[in-house]
Amino acid sequence: MNQFKQTLRQEILVKRNSLSKEVVANKSNKIKKILFDLEEFTASRKVHCYISIDNEVQTHTLITEISETKEVFIPYVVGDEIKYTKFLGFAKLKKGIFEILEPINPIEETIPLDIVIVPGIVFDQKGHRLGYGKGYYDKFLRKISNALKIGLAFEKQVVKELPNQTHDIPVDIIITEERVMNCG
Image (cartoon, rainbow, N blue to C red; front, side):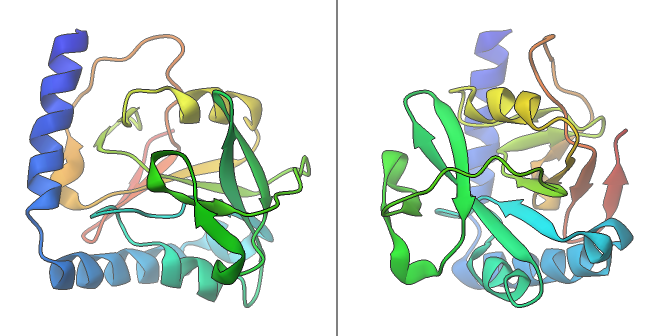
């Protein structure tokens, strides 16, 4: 199963990385508009969002726009765990582990989150996901079980079914440039 996951992860990364910056920006903008129209998102006040790298669904503009009306929290890594802190602007970030932007001097928050926007390389229609294989988000999502978990992905990152294990935490909703999938 691990070999299957690794092969699938590589296949989807190749597809995602083949997208031009313009296509990534256009699809990301469509996904952002769909997210902003989601009833659960509109009602939320405290939103956690990953900071995108490479050809992931772009979140820099998303984070900036969300922070105009809601509290935004961003992840940072300590050891093998994801913690979160309030977003204070991109000027207060530096490259951290895996070259992902994280806060320069984070102050850990423990307040309940309404929504957690989750990255992934591959998602299936039941909300299971493959990340980069380190398990950070599964551990994190287990701790914030009351928050609505939303995966952002390009349509080509969604497959019918993924193998999953008991420690895998699925997302509740997946948003692509074409649709919203309720996975719960």
